[in-house]
Image 1 (cartoon, helix red, strand yellow):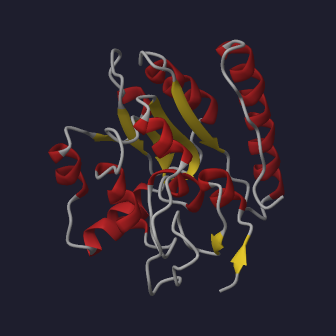
Image 2 (cartoon, rainbow, N blue to C red):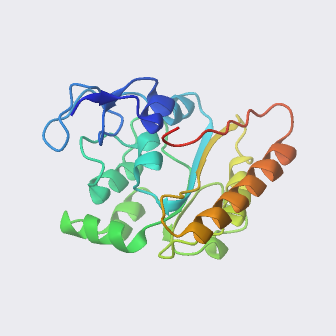
Image 3 (tube, rainbow, N blue to C red):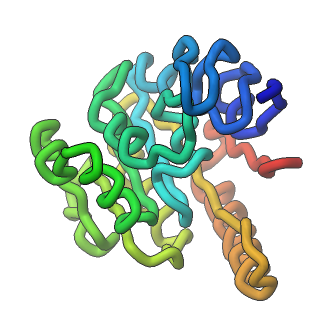
Amino acid sequence: GRRRPNSDHVVATGERTHNGVIAQSAAAVRGQRDGAPLKTILEYAEERGLATGIVTDDSLAGATPAARYAHANERDRAGAIFLQLFAPRFGDGVDVDIGAGRAAILSSVAALGRDLDQVARHRQRTVLTRLEDVPAGARRAVVLQDAEDLDIGAAVKTALRLLARGPNGYFLMVESDVHTDRVRHGLERMVAFDRVIRETAAAVGPNTLVLFTADHS
């Protein structure tokens, strides 16, 4: 239960908290008591009118993306975390959400007695299942896939295309998850992510900051 310099949390909020807590202060007790919500870097961007996005080949309710848009005392409550995408504290919420974990998230949301599609419709959003289904002229999109092998390169290009249509700039967080004992799979993901970083840095130009960091390092 001690505070740890969790890289997800410190990068997202600038403050330490307990392991397993999402964007809440160290007054939180994991799974038992909330701490004060801590404003995240994505929420600062929303407050200032930037377009915002998240891309991950892991679950969209996983700790790294969740630490940008949600506040929870237990990182494993996927349904409660994911529903916070549709109840933002600042701005109009994350504009572009692309990731995996559909089956587990839907199950966790249903266990709370909620219907994800209905929640999304109430916020004038649609939860898509494929990148190919994002409308050509869209500025916002939620893509929640079943497969873990999201094409991270295609996802980032889609996100950048949508976010660049905003007039005030954008914030985009991209995660490639290599928590795996499948060595070849993990290495292939790292190679693909390295390519995405190089291509993105070359494409966005000198007025965009591209920050690359590592988990648990």
